[in-house]
Image 1: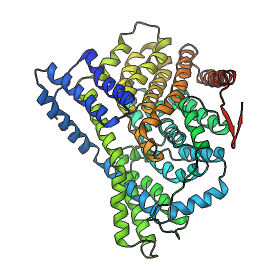
Image 2 (image 1 turned 45 degrees about the vertical axis):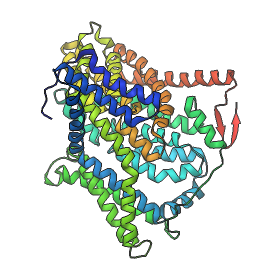
Image 3 (image 1 turned 90 degrees about the vertical axis):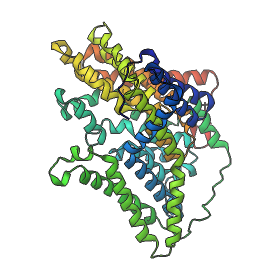
Image 4 (image 1 turned 90 degrees about the horizontal axis):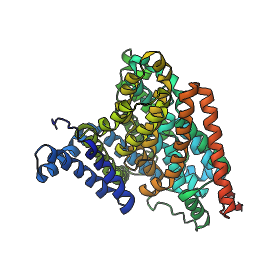
Length: 509
């Protein structure tokens, strides 16, 4: 689509608001996203003298463009879906579940293991969600951890760890946006100021160790504890699979994905590893997933765990399992394209930052709030910090501006990740619910209070950062505020006779 972007003003906010509002009201995400896209196209066409038929045509043009731009992501997801089904049908997942079940018997252990695996796989957020979800889902099911909690753990250890890991596709993307401020060195300096990522990880481990819950997540966890567990084996699964039948393909997936990203990005031609893995990460992930499928084929077919026909049937069935997630992703990409490329949603919101006539000490808190709103509306952290980071860099000129630059950049990244973390149209949110096999809007509903609590603490933390301009004071204040918030919530629940701590089946009030 070779169309010039227009400045639609307040109307540029309509598409994401329509999509998000309809999704939350109707609990049906596909039509909500489509209507959001159509709303954006109507705004564009009616503003440029077009008509409704033209708007409908542009909707499908945008969808086709986004499918082409994200072709590698689509291939990666369908290959990964195929790998999951094949490993399950080999009996490898069942064998791993039995093996892990003998060692991980408590909900606390299952949640901590999930969180630790999430922190270890920091190269890419989507890869993180799907891989950890595949490995840990049988274990968390057996330990009676709800799918909603698993989805939250996947989501909360995906983007938040990627945005503070120096070796990740996210780090390279951010570094490229702040070259004038120091590139990768500037990114590393923002890590202590990325309060949302730090506090989210703190919250994950606090919730995992204490079994503390509140809001819709508390209800989901209680339902999981009280309902009858019904474990059904896949009718097509082979019973004599072993733990290596799961572990070796997954290890191949991880190792070959890293090598694939390095190869595609030119590492073997002399580029640095951090630059190489950020060049085209989804192409590398696709190569790694294909390699894992080939290893699975070599392991399973000669040992008669499955025939070639059964193997290929598993590939097709795996593709089918990814169709719902792909539909949501494609529509979300198209909605983001309308907002960013056609009606100027990001530029409209960013004008508030440049037009705010306030002391620079308030800048970190302001840009955090603006980035959070923008990222939540568009469903993309990358698109948000791609818009705001250059603007923040331009604002922070002069002697006083230089001292607030790093806190403001950290706040921009933190707000972008918060919006991406809890937006129902974010690809990471979609992939987390897919990895946990949790209903998408249930995942959004249950994690939103957790993410928003952290965001509120972050806003207060960035007020402290703006005035102290000291990362360690900022972190200390923020962590204390988060713990105080847990105490207030716990006191309120106890005062109102709400059961909030669970201890392996016993409830402590």
